[in-house]
Length: 368
Image (cartoon, rainbow, N blue to C red; front, side, top):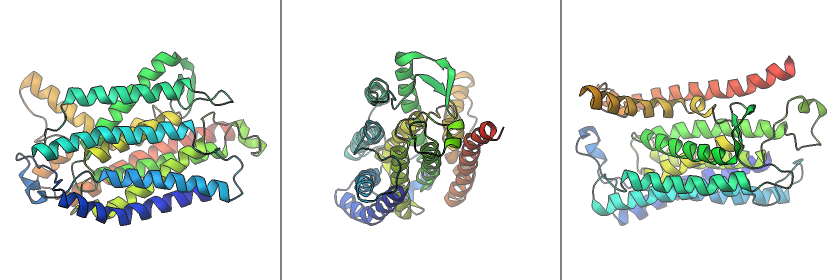
């Protein structure tokens, strides 16, 4: 647990003090976020640098290494990851490579001085490739005990053992979750601090879930015997907890500068990196069907865009003044800060319900 706390603290410090450096650097490079003319309420944000996601990606990687150094230095953990693991490779790989797709998108936007960037087809193809590569690694590279990062079972609060879909379908599902989550977080990143704050809550929930799984891990023979009345078969849960804590800490340090009025935007670099990592965490903790509940706000915002598109294409009418949903409330006269805080409340409710369902299932079995 001490290594997890250290990772969170290191990531926070790196991001908190690294973000001003990034602000100065990207400002000198004139890497400003292009603002669409259709959204006149954001005209005052012209010139704000983007690609800030680079900072918390870097902070997460540094904190991950720091956490493993602490693992080696301090006794006390029952089972320690033997250095970086396949689980770490998959989770951090998804974060880095999905972030790289976003970085390319941001770079094109900055270079062309418009908000178009990478075309949708190219973006989806790259997401598919990244999801496929890490999906194969997650499903086809077992540990010595036979455990893989991903699972061939559909999962809710744990694997549903009568829903074994096989490795091929599991990889396809892995790809689908990665693509859906990266785009959902990307859509949410439209107001200062909205995606950052929501991601901190979601990452915090996976920290709690993964650490609980570690404390009741089927592979941990030194755990108290009562914990095996209900144990979890996930691979390297302490590693998952460490990465969740590192990413949450890094985002918290970044939020200091990203809250309204933002001094820097995370850009697609950050939103896609976070989406890829969150998708990986859901797969690694065997909570795929729980993800839409934990990520309630991401789902709501994505559905608002889907509803808008379907309505306009079928009836020629718009349901919302503008989509995604947060822009609808902007045009309705809500201040940006009010929208962000209220949407954070919705995100917090989803996270609370999701973690409650996870823990409630444990109580139902052990207590019943």
